[in-house]
Length: 280
Image 1 (spheres, rainbow, N blue to C red):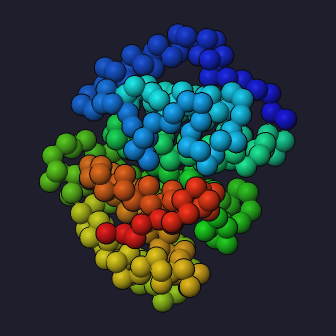
Image 2: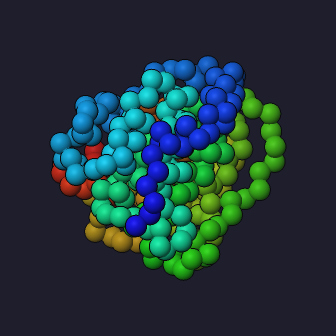
């Protein structure tokens, strides 16, 4: 059993660090850092539970989740999800595993919330790291990522560029896949690999967006469900497209696709019995 530590304890022991983090985030250049925060599902949980279907969460884990879900703005939400994950997400030590299914679900839901907030705040590096974390733990990729250290695939090195804020500037920004996708596609060399590799080799974000959208439109979820090989490519493409939307500042499209990914996550199937909506 992992020792229990609450968000309140962490904050009480690290007041100076928390104040510094809030101060630095609040003084940043991002215009939406103090925007009101709404969870990915578009609603705040009503105390004392987060949705009737998951009224099994108990103790401080549940309370800490509620505290993060009801943050006033993006800055505070970012801080609270960071602390929630630091306290409740198990480390690499097998002895520090998840206690039960609700524990797994809450941590997984926290990752979806945190990655969305980072992209909304323009923190691409943090968003990419969290999205890789979600992807690595995704059951779709168990066959691809086997073994411990082999799961980590370093992304291609990026040249430092000046941040751009205009839509045209973002669209022309160099595109790099999230990680190791070209390598995986060439290794599998399946019927979907040619178009998949072409999308990963896009020159800029706008070209990547168009290619990933076309790739997914030609391979609807209903079709991929009966083809395991295609399902893996589709899931990979979904992760790439949601990230591309966020980097292009298409926040509503990014949120919609991230929500779709969450609804398709096996951990949440009984919460969303109707399944995920089809892509646009």
